[in-house]
Image 1 (cartoon, rainbow, N blue to C red):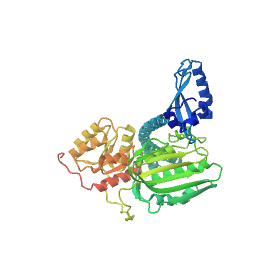
Image 2 (image 1 turned 60 degrees about the horizontal axis):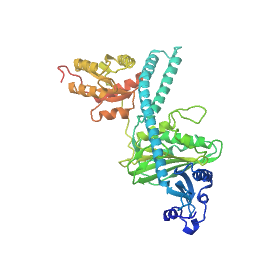
Image 3 (image 1 turned 90 degrees about the horizontal axis):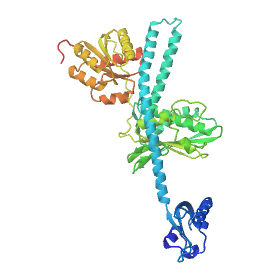
Image 4 (image 1 turned 135 degrees about the vertical axis):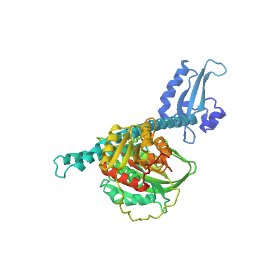
Length: 499
């Protein structure tokens, strides 16, 4: 080097006398020396003048800087007679490009998982309609069969299998963020602590469970059963990450304030608004995960095991999303993993549980009368009609909202009950319900859906539904739901013109 400009001195942090007489290659990291040597040779021979090359160099303070080097051959210029090398710091540009690529990848991953979530929710809904036919007919058959009937054990197997299939659809609904939530205000540390024995028998004998619960942890408003599923899934995954080795699994709860909001890490991109949150973290000293695996762990049925075991972390993601939270993953291959679940603090303080005596069954509630079933699935319509007739009802059926409204208008004064599906073509359940209310308000309407109650009923807030029954349901489930619906509407039907 025969000349070093002030900007080059600032870039590398050397004084002028430290640069003069020094080879450019002395500043380049060893990994990039061969590259820059080759490019400079091309410049000397006049074959690559004016083409920039990106290399990494070492500053005087020992830090690295990424630069674009541009060599220009001026050997034939009498005033220069040398190679002029210009260097431009591109570290910040490359950092921003890497962040943009990462954000783009995470957005694409989020969009892919959201699409899969919509698909899973739709499949679960349709599957629940089919399971209603299987479970319902099995329950009717069991009610007709004598205990000693040779075929009874086979029908019981059909019923149990349908119930297990329904549990799988609940996992699919959880993944789609439309799972069944029964929210209550709880202390997250207490929920985890109550699972202590269950957790201890679920992990490897070589694993040590350690708990670190924040004192006076603010409450969260969650479905405790769903959160237990999240905790159990994370603990089992942590145990399996340890394999046959001894190790530790740390479970921690903390309270955090995120002034600038919270952005999930190494998971589908979730951005939570600024505020106070409760954080549950589960970490292990296991094998960790390579980057390629981290990008896939939230996909449905993705597994590193010899065979898939269900939705796993995909369901965990759906549950956390359904609670307006986020999940992050911090992992390094060979150094373990940490999963961090962030949940909003409850807007209301936790109230002490009030144990109310169970109400006595209303044995005087009459069963029977005229009922209307509105559902676009024929198997569900016919099955529900058969069940209602066994409960003493005379039953009308309609295949969609328009047909349902026509039958409702003609028979509204005699109708004692309407069972209305939420998702239908033409008029959906909500619009059909609202039009029925304009004809006659007193008829109790029992809503049914293949989606979860919280998702379905939230659209009917303040509209005085008589109840909800989720598909699939059997004879006993329908009987209980019908009795509850009738108990909430004790006003008898009257004759006369529709109001």
